[in-house]
Amino acid sequence: MGAGCFFSALAMALMCGAWAAEYLHEEVQVYVVQDGSPDKQFDLLVDGDEVLYMDFNLKKEVPRIPEFQGLVMRAGEAGISAQVAILKQNFNVCKNLSHGSLEPKVAPQTAMYPEEPVEWGRPNTLICAADGFFPPRISMKWKRNGVSVTEGINTTEYYMKNDYSFQRFTYLSFVPSPGDMYSCHVEHEALGNPSTVFWEPEVPEEGSGPGTVICALGLSLGIISAVVGVVLLIKERQRLQAQQQGI
Image 1 (tube, rainbow, N blue to C red):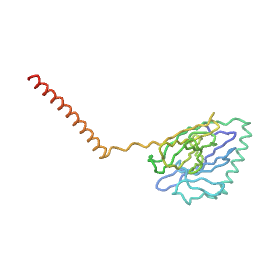
Image 2: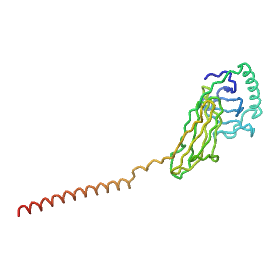
Image 3: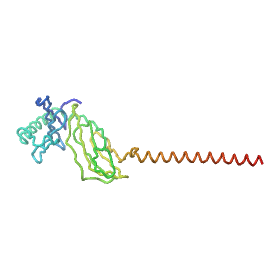
Image 4: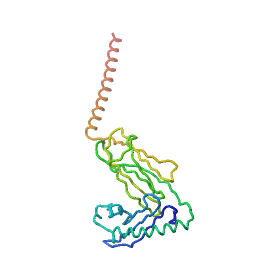
């Protein structure tokens, strides 16, 4: 997908060079302005990982990685908002020049998986991922056994990829229990119908331990003893029959 002038969405990445620690890191500032919700977004990426984003309601930076707690942008929210205002002006000019040309629409690929190996009764996190979609407007909702879930959910910002498509993740805290069924419902304008992925907890059977080996050994010995007993019984019957015929 090219980075052209899109009618209702415009994504822009600004390269800010590299900074040195023990080795070089690539730092990228990503601004997104578009019609619809969200109408603006700012992220700071380091080596492709989001380290913080701007919460425009709280007017402060929110770290995604604990090690970057306390990291702030130069000029803060005011500077970011000023840059967003410039981009929105350019965006409006771009829309006028496009004469209503339709923007590309790419449907998301959706997957769901647990964060940790599943154990009954042990708290875990389900991850629903939507990948490779455009424009960055998407709805992701959770259900448990067909009933909507609204608590224990954390949804990320939109992550821009190198091809200008986007990713988004939503997390659900849950406790695995037999018989439960979870589903993630994704709505995007490139989809003809909402996309739904399902997940049911399955706990792998316990591995073979000493108890399992002893039980299997006992069962084998029991089978062998039964076979030996049957053989001896047959031989004893044959001996008795031979004696009777001799008489």
